[in-house]
Amino acid sequence: MSTSKPCFSGDLMPSEQRFLCAMREVGFGRFEYVQIRNGQIVLDPWPVAVRDVKFGAETAAERTAHSEYQLKSQVAEFFEYARDVDDGEIRTLEIRHGLPFSMEVELAGRQRGGRP
Image (tube, rainbow, N blue to C red; front, side, top):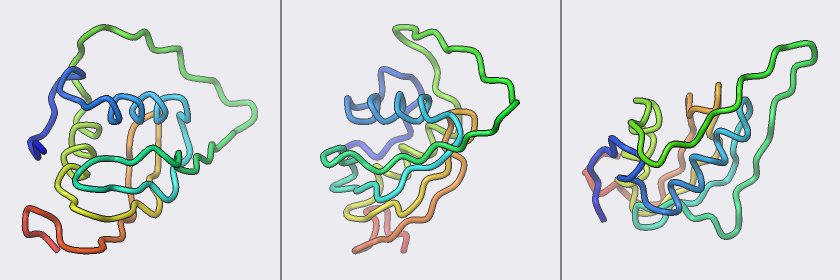
């Protein structure tokens, strides 16, 4: 398992690509109970998604999918962190503008990088 920071969409594993699409679909909200095993996001069972809805607010424009694109720094940092976790659970992952903003993580063991 590579613990390097992904820089481009092509650097993401299939599960990471699916989860990135899900974050964009939520837009504003959070994911709860996201399992991480051996540095990979577990999508079966699918994590709980909670969308924040504001009435009267303008919606963001649809994003067009390109075959290869550079990842936003928040996305790269999120996946770099997840890849470094042996076994844990993201209790909540807050999403803003379709991007990871903050999270609470429960670590069952230590991370591979030696960080507690």
